[in-house]
Amino acid sequence: MKNYFIVGASSGIGKALTQVLHDEGHKVYGTYLKNHVQDNGAIYRKLNVLEEGIEPGFLPDELHGLVYCPGSINLKPFSRIKPDAFISDFELQVIGAIKVIQSVLPNLKTVEQSSIVLFSTVAVQQGYNFHSQVATSKGALEGLTRSLAAEFAPKIRVNAIAPSLTNTPLAEKLLSTDDKIKANDERHPLKRIGQPLDIAQMAAFLLSEKASWISGQILKVDGGMSSLKS
Image (cartoon, rainbow, N blue to C red; front, side, top):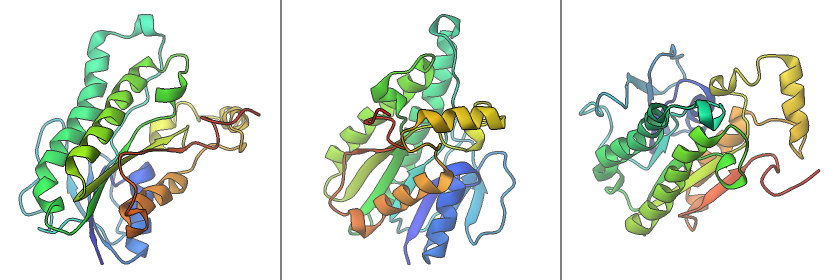
């Protein structure tokens, strides 16, 4: 049994990952902000990463992995985005991750090898209309991923997952009707959008010893969007 900490564990990918890790017999510590937490064996605390730190004593001394899930998807023409919106996204997706990593770094260093998993987006390396706000923050996270992987090696592995559109609460405006879901299914070479479990299974792999020789990577889990044309 290993100890894992998931920030944003109550919905979407974080919720799916919590269940995967619990089913594998691990101990999961998770945070939530607004969503009601169902009993799935995890230990939860409410946390606003923009306003507060990790509660002392919430986590065990030995921590084998950290996953930072909070994010946002705001798609607008660049000319309509105020600079403050870029700052807000950066604070949530980058500064929030930095604060959490710094808080739990001593716990991650107590074990022989631990793992950090962050989340980017296919839009960073592909380039899509109206994605400047989300791609800016996630691009910074990709840089953070590689820098920390170099700095923390060989003790702590650091990787990021870059999904395409996934059926989570963050994407509900883009998937609010059957027609929207079908249209987005067809955009992907594998002819479906992602599901939380698709991404959660990759995160669980990166946390595990099966990925013990993988660090500093941006793993594309995107239904073929980043490399295939259909």
